Length: 172
Image (tube, rainbow, N blue to C red; front, top):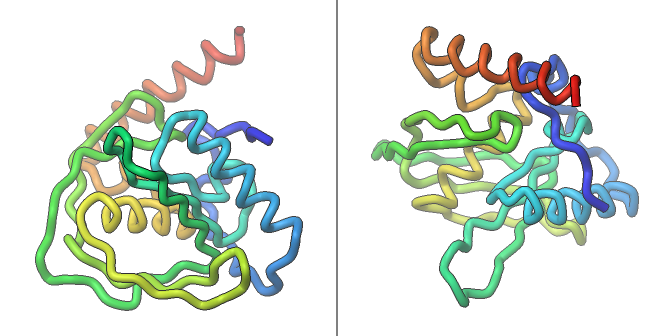
């Protein structure tokens, strides 16, 4: 089931998500809904707070090459356990901040540990777009948006555009 994606500014996007203590069918269904919502948007990552769910859950799939098999990842309680000193800068966007982009610098490579949808602990080294995306989504779980990494003036400009967009959407 596709879910509605919250648009910034929304106070729920700034709240810290709570850890998943007990993996159950309801949370697995939420994860499936998030993948469907993300693919439909279309996007490469989605965090539970973006669909008004305050739990530590992200969905991502950074496979973008034509003809390459999708690689959906569901991560409960993801955490970065190691990060490279080397940095990379990507122009990031966000499904909660449509059509707005900004250059964000983050560690180029990270090691991430999480619980998969079957309850198994997993760990993986990620680089490139995968590393950027997983850091972006984990930021969401901590109440942080990519625009929080930008200069204040640019952040305010984007926020004003989003307020205007929300007013237009409310009018129908």
